[in-house]
Length: 162
Image (cartoon, rainbow, N blue to C red):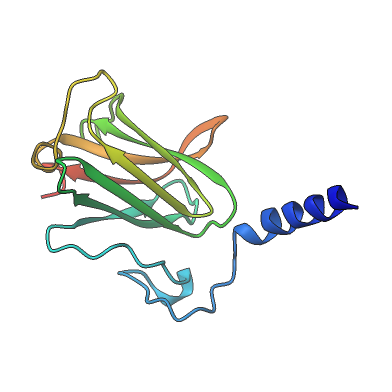
């Protein structure tokens, strides 16, 4: 009996964990109301937001917020619109959107529209801080799925965004 209760509880958490209920009172940040609300990204006076543009008629957009932390790291928050339960990998890549480039920093995948990654270094192990990311020659990509590297949203970041 205990196993059945544990199983049913686990199933309920899985099904309720990714809500597609857009009726909350959470404010929309720089996006049309038809896209649905974006959850609150932590406020910080040094926070820098980059608006993710939809690519290939995916209908997926959102915000990528870079926030400097007291320990010298940077936290990147991504909140997507136009998707709910899908898993979307993300990366910060070298170069601007138009020229493309390989991944410089692999971010945590967006799960249930949200991703949070604490950045301390590039994928090659070289340390990077907030100031360096703000002058970095790069762009951020959101991908269709772990098995499909089609880009569904992107934005220029660092020096390419300013």
